[in-house]
Length: 456
Length: 161
Picture 1 (cartoon, rainbow over the protein chains, first blue to last red):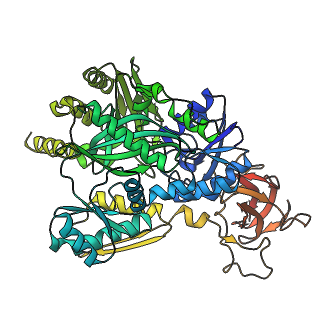
Picture 2 (picture 1 turned 90 degrees about the vertical axis):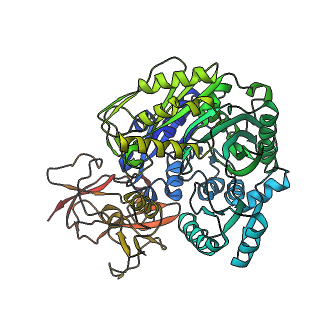
Picture 3 (picture 1 turned 180 degrees about the vertical axis):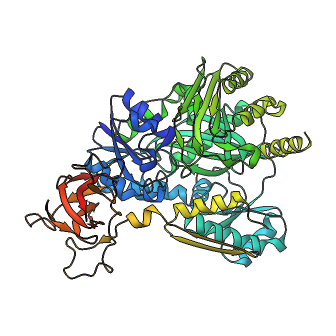
């Protein structure tokens, strides 16, 4: 692999700006591709060169791999960073990079394919002695019924082609199975172009714990600890933290080792995340899936380890291999991230696009803000509603929660509705403060708030 | 089961990310019809396999015309008052002629119709013909031959009829 001098960033929003920041710190030039809607946004003003690739809809801009590849070749970029979402976990851009001798700052196309197929990833987990939730593929209704009987109710039907809750169905009785199977398959087909589904035993009380890994592509992998992302609404993460609260050292070491082993088995290249479901009742954990990209919540890991994950991604893509050892990745203190979205919690979290009349982010010690939003920014209805991330780092979890409450109180966004007050309520709740909530907890909190508002 | 505003928003997003232009949903007595309209389809040009568009090809059969001519905010400064930009309908490498060494499709001073081919934009070896999208006389050609044009960048300027 040749040295990397000029990086094209095939993304937008806060992650584009975050990648630009590290590139400039490393002395690399940046080329940012933008849609028409993002021409004047903050990332476009920070990049060394900006190229407009199409109109606002992502299908006509950020999802056009050929156009982005042409932009990279024509601007002399020697590497492409895909960020998260968009083309980051589709093989198309990675493959085009491989064909055109441009470094893809991420895994190989074959690795994206291997982990993108959830059934294949499950088999890979089994093969590397990483525990999985009991279950398996279902093709015919007879298969499904037999497996249902074997696993026992309730079960989850999931899409082979992707995650994020799409195509996922909870089935509590045999009668409901045929309908749920059909619906899951149709949803999966629509969302991922792959109608295949599989079935797993449903774990009632689970926490979402994931392991950050870095691999050199030649079998060497280090893990940088875990993150707890159990505060979710409909499979969308809202708060992430590290270390996972209330987990003993032995269990933590086993989870992290399992994540590392899984990535080693793939000869994984770059930054990735191995997700696990922690079964609270049984104190056991199961492999969920691997995300072959930088994650939205990566900053909490950076805060406690001091490692710049984007810089490591670039170093690996440039053929420098792993520059950090396991001992350097020892975490210190506690970090929490709150995602700030332009959405209305009082109205079923409806997206709230529009003009940001005024934006004020916290400037406090131990607080990091990753955002693309300033006064005058426009939140486009074409993209996700994430406007920023507030990340805090403190010696203890309790201190981190306090600092986050201060940071949220110091954040002022006017012009669009946001979830800032909602996040403050999460931080203020005794359950969250006790630590270790499961993935259903937030749904309960939302229902409770709704009821209070109705009666108040 | 009813369809909430949130569901519709989600469906819109799915359609947005798909390659489909229309979606008809019929469930539990609710009918939802979504059509993609507005800017993108009209602006898109269709890839043509051959480098040069075949002579005598009817406009209806070949690539759709480029954007309806308008002075896009980012097209640049008009060379004369009233001139309209023909913006690049996609990012790629702009070629003025069907093949190297051949005469350009159009020159400054030429009269063009909406379906007149004004050049080719190459995206990863795929050749896309670009049409004027407006009738008038070419004032100037602003995109250099063989170089990158961005989406929306002015290829040339036309004094409309």
